[in-house]
Amino acid sequence: MERLIRSTQELLWERGYVGTSPKAIQRAADAGQGSMYHHFAGKAELAKAAIERSGAELRAAADAQLTGEGSASARIAGYLERERDVLKGCQVGRLTADPDVIADPMLRAPVAETFEWLRKRLAEVVAEGKRSGEYPDSLDPQRIAATVAAVLQGGYVLARAAGSSEPFELAVQGLIDLLPEATK
Image (tube, rainbow, N blue to C red):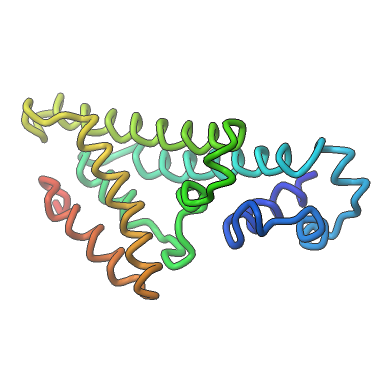
């Protein structure tokens, strides 16, 4: 079951939902058809499990950067600057461009939940920064959180379009430049 989920995660990231056939999953997982259908009712159920896993992994990686020592800006900067396969795109974010994922409420739900969690967690960090006096009272944590998420996802899109990580890095560094005390 683990190999099926992991293989589906990779295939969804590389090919999208339509391009991820049951045969491709079975081949990548080195599993037979019987094994796949023993654990999952079909491709959609397996894809949902894979998307949920990708979301959980994204949340764990983000939370590791956003929790701990340092100012709010330093933690947000750490999250933005962590190592990523920029040209491959975000494993969860890329699914928003997949019409079959977005059209299916069961497949869209874990994507939406992941980004909702991310915006909430970022807003919590910004709110901590406000409470500590790092940020002014006028700063809206939800707006800043949405901006951080949008810059990151938009950076992936720009980088993939350019075939270079440079637009992503410029977007991330531009946002970090706007954060107070990010480099202190």
